[in-house]
Image 1 (cartoon, rainbow, N blue to C red):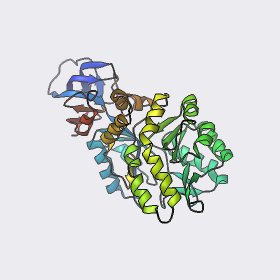
Image 2: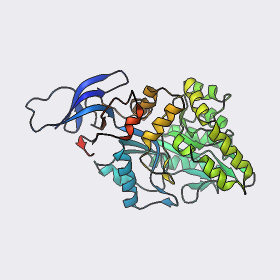
Image 3: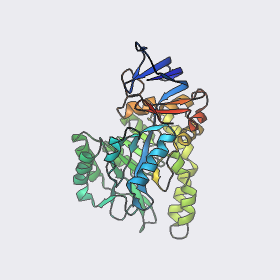
Image 4: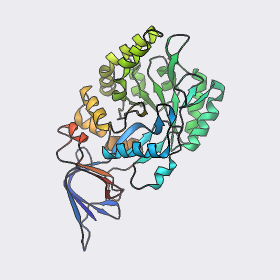
Length: 358
């Protein structure tokens, strides 16, 4: 049995003095006949959420189970106990049988236009196949489907939208009919209007979000997951493509330069913003604390940046926090993360399914 005491942040303003872990679940009532209790003291948050992560994905595509396990453990060590896997070619259902690994909400495999995404990552198809592939991934996933909304068009030499509006509208409608939400990778401006007006639920990265598009996002309640730790790589990517694709390189630099203004403008307009790192592929796992710090740098108040990886993110994904009877997934820190989000980088203890794992 585990006793957590100090300050339990069950919500932004809901602070308790203690909780008990009984049978792997949260209880705020002291159990009778308590013996052999382990006590952990500090400031407790619900297990953190990385809402854009790729377990089972490497730089060249799918990785073996041992590598995927190391990825999941790297996330767990930093307090990430709930992952929305935003597209992976690997079958990671075996993770669900492991009580010591983060819980994963899968979006199936990326769906991309032919030769318009990184090789080995996605189903690469044409618009007339989009509805069928969205239906397939909606059935395979855990309530989400992931599209690649834009990518470099080599003939154009710049980012451009991947799908006609009619195809996107029909595909999103089919996903919703099957009970799945849809999100899309989008760097540029050009694909956003069609996607949002077609009923999409979320946009990943959203670097192309401009002042004229913000009211549309806000009115439709479309969330964004900015992945600022990934956007930080744009200058390096731009430098690598300068000779062959100068127009694309200049565009990537502009998107990077205005990244903080983009995120702050979205937040100020009431657009839901959530934490995601884009770990996997070329980016390391375990960066959730750095992403929260980036949101604060962008101008989001610390309490809201915390919510974007804890209370608010869990509610958005339909998973409990530290409610009575919920699975005991929590992270304990030495000081109040509301006062300084940098404390997220150094968990004192990580508790997953009621067991102390760190």
